[in-house]
Length: 349
Image (cartoon, rainbow, N blue to C red; front, top):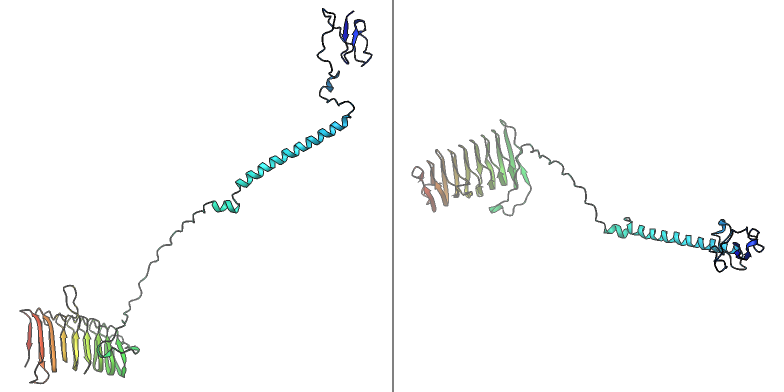
């Protein structure tokens, strides 16, 4: 008789009992088995599997182990795995953030500093010229006044057309006269140690013929029909600028020295006397380093005892005359440079 295998527990059963429930596992009746040639049943591939499809993935507990314990072990393992995964992800993210932070001190120091903003230069300030003003230059004393260091007092000039007279009796002081122009007229009387004149122009007149000075320094040009009168009985008079434009200069220094200090060159006038000007001098020593030139220009020199006269050059139609203060006095030393054929250099008896 053929046999079949119970699909639930694998119990061999006779073919006559195929439609009856299995006495061991109470499984449902199995289908009719296929007979084998050797009258033995072929192995069932579903042997040992659950009869219900819902139990296919349910782990089968070991003999004697309760199902709940295995469930607890699985839950603990799942939780541990989840925690490890989350921790690993957070760890990698923290490393990435540490590398990418630009605000960290060590990272920020490596970043190049931004270039400062370009400053736009303010518009150039236009300088406005001050009102016309003639400064009084600071001059150094010379000759007998080399140790002079008092305060300099400036003579006040009145408006053109008014005569200003200054009576001075301060032999230890220095008086300075600023540039005079436009017909200004100043008279100085008395006595000072040093007088400084900074120039005359446009018909100005400075009369210091009654002011006795130990030293007189004239630094500015005498021009434009101006008049200058000076007195230094035993002192030194130095003129460094040009006498021009039909001006008139008179110097009375019978025991002193008069020097026109500016030498004339092709590019510089120096203390040249020119253009119809007149210069009259009485002194012991007279030196002209500048040329005497022009038409109607006249220089008259009166020499005292033990005198010396030096003239650089006489050009144009200029006239230079000299004589002794007292008739019969011998002239010690007189010399002259070049004299043009049209010019005159002569001694008066």
